[in-house]
Image 1 (cartoon, rainbow, N blue to C red):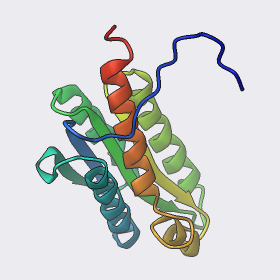
Image 2 (cartoon, rainbow, N blue to C red; image 1 turned 60 degrees about the horizontal axis):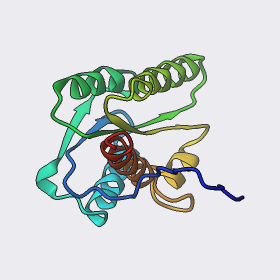
Image 3 (cartoon, rainbow, N blue to C red; image 1 turned 180 degrees about the vertical axis):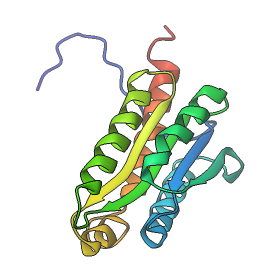
Length: 161
């Protein structure tokens, strides 16, 4: 599709020179740990230094947004990567947790003060969760980290001219 002669701003996937907070739940830690590994791998591959990545653990997916809000308000980070795994059970609890957790993370992102990558994975089965944590369906932690890096770079450059 042609873009005519409009000035276009797009982020580059580069984590170089940026500081990142990874907010990860402990619930379903077997899968969440894989998301964390993927996120760190993605950030390092795109130029981040280990010293510029901090990992914060919280009990479950519902608590991710509160910790992410504190990280955003601290002014210490260019981007936040939220990581969790919620698997449907026999009660409506799944829908409540997933809906509230993702809406709260999205609200932080929508403020536009700090870049946010949402790697909260909602799955019907344990098999789906394993697939999204690094097997058949890729690693959603890696993907969320790259989104955060790209948006942090875009935030830093898009409105500076």
